[in-house]
Amino acid sequence: MPTLNWLGKDKVVNYAAQVPCHALDFKYNFGGGTDNKIIHGDNLTALKSLLPLYEGKIKCIYIDPPYNTGNEGWIYNDNVNSPQIQKWLGQVVGKEGEDLTRHDKWLCMMYPRLKLLKQLLSDDGAIFISIDDNEQANLKLICDEIFGAQNFVATFSWRKRTAKSDVPHGISQDCEYIFCYAKSDLFQGAVKGKERKYYVTDDFPNRAWRFHDLTTQRTAAERPNSFFTIVNPKNGKEYPASSLRTWAITEETFKEYYAADRIIFPGDYDFLKISKPVLRYWKDDDIKKAGKNFGMVAASTFLPAEVGMTQDGTKEITAIFGEKKFNFPKPSSLIQHIVGMATDKNSIVLDSFAGSGTTAHAVLNLNAADGGNRKFILIEMEPYAETITAERVRRVGGSFDYYEVGDPLFVEGDINPAVDIEQIRAYVWATETHTPYVKPECDDCAEFLGVDKGIAYYFYEGVLDSDFLATMRTRADSYIIFAESCAVGEEFLQRYKIEFKKIPRDIIKLWADAQIY
Image 1: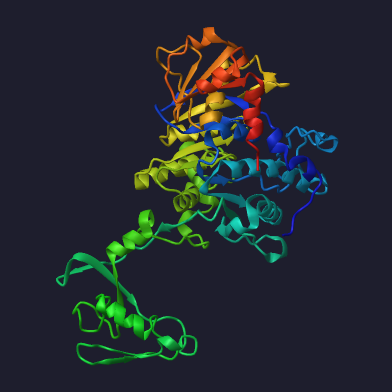
Image 2: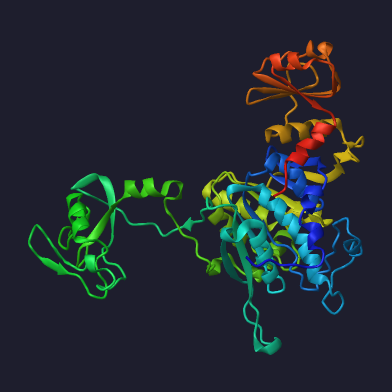
């Protein structure tokens, strides 16, 4: 498989594994109880800090990263331990004439973020990435490398504007692209299809049915076994096959289908205006086969006009704020179409380049349309994360918890004293159980974290000894106790199914063991 090399690649391929996990500092809630999150801060550190709780749980990721046009004014800020990359820090990335490493910087920025996004995706999930001609070829190659070329699903072409006349070469570049990659072959996209017409008739009063053409686009030479004459057993009328479009069944399967009441002939039902036999399909079989996707059809890479263009996104955000607060926003109808094809009603949707908050708006609109309970996570590093991103969600009726990316949990191999110990406890719990930490209210000791899958967890900043064991009140199948040291013998630990984990060594090891792949 072809791979892409660029200046600094060797330094960023594994950089995501080196990024420290940071605290996510809760700032406020808007709108009441919710699992929606808006996070202000660098998306690389924010994504790393989401892993303990959300690894493998995100059904749909949509991102609209910088297109690297040379006019965007984005800045490379990842503090990679490389003299060459260190020179890039804080520099505005410009055009080739001004900055010969523009594409290298963009690739170095995108690569570790895509690796973290892959790890957050569920096995049946997919990522959708908006891009234009500046980096689409490079993006395709690094996505093939990270997600696997076999997991490339499709490229959607989105018409962003109507044709302009004053353009180079007389060609108006009116389209952008949306790459779709699946986590695995378990991903299945679909959109709501045109409602099928089912009939209920006197001969089958409890079993609705529909019908479909019984021919196929194959010639007699291609399908010789299907080139035969169907005879209606009830009246002997013959229906010869066409040499250019044969029957979709063989003579043997015709007999099976007729015995199962699946062949309908002209004249069987007065309301059917047919001139040749058709095949009957039962609604209950359709439902069984489609499962939760009943009523859905395959999604087309030809996006319908109703997804809107950039001008629709601009009108939308102007209507919300009373002024043009954001340049070139995507219309929420576009993201709603994407999220609709890629999620079920209880999915989590992530956007780590949140911008004006269009993805959250789209999720809220989709939930209102189909009664869903999808949740969103937005990450935005710019100062407008609160004044535009979060404010938009407020104004369109969404609820959320607002966070800031805080301090790293560990500094130089030790717990960061600047971090609240409750955040360390929450981190330990989430990394061990992959569930949200809720401070327990029980008569156990203060060091008790909770029980998950029969295991009781404790976090004790002291020596694990008989005095501490005497304070424990919770009965469980087994116990994991984080402590600074252990004064209890190995035989005793094994007898009572206690596993000792050392603070801070084994807390840090929790993260080291969770390899970024």
